[in-house]
Image: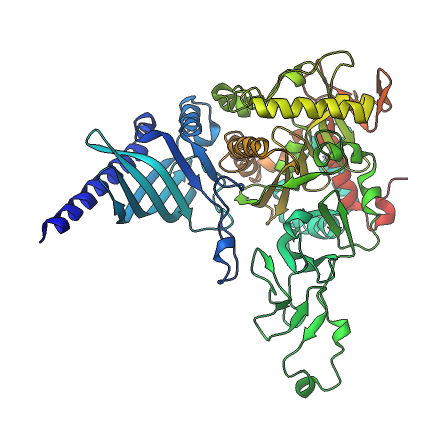
Amino acid sequence: MSAPDLAALLVRHEVQDFLYREAELLDERRYEEWLELFTDDARYFMPMRRNVPHDEPEREFTREGLDVNWFDEGKDTLARRVQQIRTGIHWAEEPPSRICHMVSNVQILHASPTEIGVKSRFLVYRNRVETETDVLVGKREDLLRRANGSFRIARRKIVLDQSVLLAKNLTFFF
Amino acid sequence: MADLDPGSLDGLVDVDRGTVSREIFVNEEIYRREQEQIFARAWLFVGHESQVPRPGDFAVSSMGEESVILCRDRAGRLHVFLNSCRHRGMKVCRYDEGNTVEFLCPYHGWSYGTDGALVGVPFGKDAYGEQLDKRRWGLIEVAQLENYKGGIWATWDASAPSFFDYLGGYKLYLDLLLDGWDGREGGTEVIGGVHKWLIPCNWKFPAENFSGDRYHGVSHRSVDMVGIGPSGQGRRDMGERNQARWLDVSFPELGHSMIAFLRPHDAPLAPAYEDAPIVADYFRRCEEERHRRRGAQWRLFGGPGTMFPNTSPLARQPRTLAVWHPRGPHQTEVWRWYLVDADAPAEVKDFLRHYYIRYSGPSGLTEQDDMENWNYAHKASRGIIARQYPYNYEMGLGRATRGFEDHGLRLPGAITDVTGATASEHNQRGFYRRWRQFMASASWKELVAP
């Protein structure tokens, strides 16, 4: 194996480890530590999707910064979501849901000494109270920045594979 | 219950005593009757004209359970069609939106123009000879349609009163949503993208919540603690509300209602939108302009409301319009549009868009908790024991007055002033009074207020 190949392998391994650790923090409800993984200027974006003709793909997604989206926010709003869960009276997450994040298909899109673009798949399972169960599946595109020997998430785009949202709410993170 | 006669509805909905049976939320037969008695007859919100600006533009929507197509034909005229081929019923459009010259049914190939006319029938001459009269087999179209300040409403019932008779005195309150902040008629647009999601409860839970439920503060205490409002606190600006008279406005004979507020005639504008000076500035200038244009009516501003049966304007903070589409007795599909002044500066629109998303819908810090409550209120009302015990709607019984007046400003509707009491269930009673009339009346003749 050549040195560049080895370096690429190492990067993918580092990134995978990072994404798995992140999922662990979420599933263990360590939300404050999870927030720390984001840069202060981070963007967190989940568009809505429409059924459109195959040759009009530009209409399929609602636009970041312009349209109504499922999420289109920065770290400040993410932090408020965490604070709300911690109030203990955010009824939509009290009692807390059981959540499991599966992350796979990790692909490095580009890598420089400072920034790495990575695409992955997610399966988020949420079970709540008794029989209430949601399975949300889709893709993520992250922009990671190297910081202190690890990464920070500078941008996360979440593409959910649904048009009408089949879950009653999005009280959890992707 | 197998049969529903008008007498049995008296037992189920007794608004004079302030009780409503749980049956009307969970009973399959009642749900089926609602589709015929209410959704096939009432005026329903379909969409906004800004979704279909050009000839050939279409947007698929719902009226009750049924899929419809809002379409602007090649000549620029608006139509609402049932989204179902006249031949075998296939949906002629499975896109959410787009621009087209025709709707081609993918089953046998019948095609329809944007005006609904049947224009293409494969092998028409050979297979049908002279039998098929294409003029009789166009897409099924609503009986009446109204474009009111950009909002498109329609009804399947030709005998229904006009949209404006249906709206009645509620027009003043619906205008609080649809008019510009500066008091100009109309002038609002929807931000691109319609929130669409499924919630596990009967459609009347959100409809009555929006009709006038000021009582559910505990639902939202967590978001109030966290603070997502446009001035960085609570979930909205409370300054203007706290100095105002709180009015529960209902039109029981129509079923419409709104939580409204009346500023004192002699107080300055309370601060708002303090997180964004440019928005605060815009808002202040608009309010001054509105004062100049509307005179004493400037003092009136709105909150949530419900236009019978399932359209809920929220006049501001956030400024939205929701439709609660029935999807069986135990499920509702919510669609929500977000409104801004069309000519507001881009920074104002952007600030409001962020606030709207943070507040409303499945990702909104406020509404998430509503949906949890509607979900499990519905679920806990389905049992055979639970159904025997009605819900309580006694709050503020007998306190409503007609002919409300404050310093020369007269307001239409039956109004309960809840400034001191904080809340009443006056609006909800009005909603269910009308619901009962719709369920019991055989024709629009009986439904039109005498």
